[in-house]
Length: 252
Image 1 (cartoon, rainbow, N blue to C red):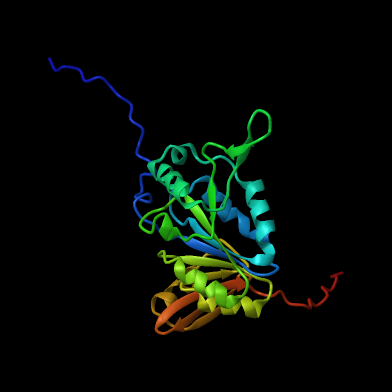
Image 2 (image 1 turned 90 degrees about the vertical axis):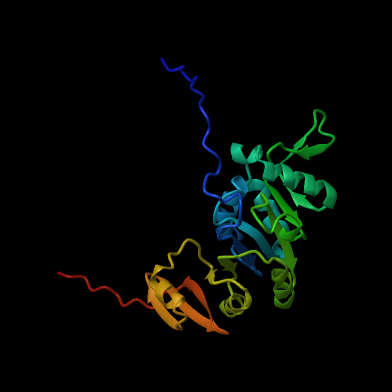
């Protein structure tokens, strides 16, 4: 009779979809002056919890007037990472890299027994200030999010040029529509969400694919395909609501 092979339970590989081997559809966030920081946080906090995967927020550009507030909200919102990331080789590599860089970081901190010295909590997410992802990994997720501070749009353009990952999209948070639109046009990404997130691009996919200029008002959002130098860019923002609603007549 056949020898019985002992059964060994093996955990399926993590993450199992190749998203640890290369950056898949990473995104960036721009927080311009007077941006709604709270509205911008959810996708970032998702990434900080599990920074291996698809559609990660790889980098954030924050206006200098919002830097402290933003860092405070990151500290308040972050939790210890997903257990599979905590023990992943990519995270260990990032920690080793950080030791060499002496960069300013935003992490979860804990005091020692007498509250004298603080140290990073094991498995803490990491936001690295003033370094681009190329210092960590341009090839695959690095498990860190990079943070850049800008004073004006020209500086934003220069900083954004240093982050040359295969970005799929950008979220631009900026109450001044003209400024937001200008930023959207300068960013080298195929899709830009202005003051919104998670809006399906389905209504304009066809036009984007065919590089055809197009505008559409659909379900409270304004969609646009702009073609710049032969390259299409989708821009989406919440449509301004009508200022005046006619009174509804009571029916007898």
